[in-house]
Structures are given as C-alpha cells and as structure tokens.
Image (cartoon, rainbow, N blue to C red; front, side):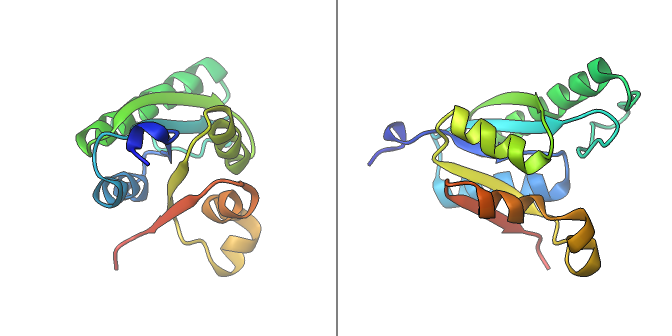
Length: 150
C-alpha cells in the first residue's frame, strides 16, 4: 500500500515542545510524502494550547482565541512540512479536546492520529485527564503517542 492509498496523518498540535517532538518523530517513523492535517483544538476560557511568542488574547473572546488557535495550527503545519509531510492546518472549536481530535480524524478519514503525551499521572491524571489516553481509548483509529525524551 502506498502513501497515496492512506488517509492523512492527523497531528494534534497544541504548540508545546511535546507536540513538536511528535511531529518530528512521525517524520522519522513514517517517511516523507504523506498528507497531513495539523489540528489545534480550542475553546474559550479553558485554553489548552500554547500560542506563539508574543501572542496575547482575551480567553473569553472566541474570535481572538480562534485566531490564536489558527496561528498555532499554522505553526505546526510548517513544522510538519519541514518533517516531510504535505500538511495543512486546521483549528476547531470543540470540547473536550480528545473528542475534537477524534471527530476531525473521522471527518477526514485519518489513517493515523499522532500526538505527544504530557504524561499526567497520579492525581493530576485523574483530575485533569490525559488527552492522549482518551484519544487512544475512544478513537477507532490507530494512534501514535510520542513521549518526551528523558
């Protein structure tokens, strides 16, 4: 099966170093030429992505949060292109984050979901949850979870 026969790789990109590492690792593991979508899921108030340097916005203003999410996804798509993917960016308002990732993967028939694990364990993991764990548990698609380097 060639890369053209597969659906796109879906990267969940929140602007963190781990999300960047996930893109780099997928580039090493999957090779170049694959189609990819770089997704930043957002919502007002409970912003769960890291905007670019110097970017400020009112977390209660959906237009500002949405624009910052679009810019974040575009940064991630540029990284994916540098890693060898034919990437487009996408920002989507959804909650919880894991559901937004799973929905976009289904909407675009993604062949693989790639995301970094922030490693929330113990009490933090119980109360805050793990986006990576929830995507892996609830999505019917293959998931590559990249862990930080020790």
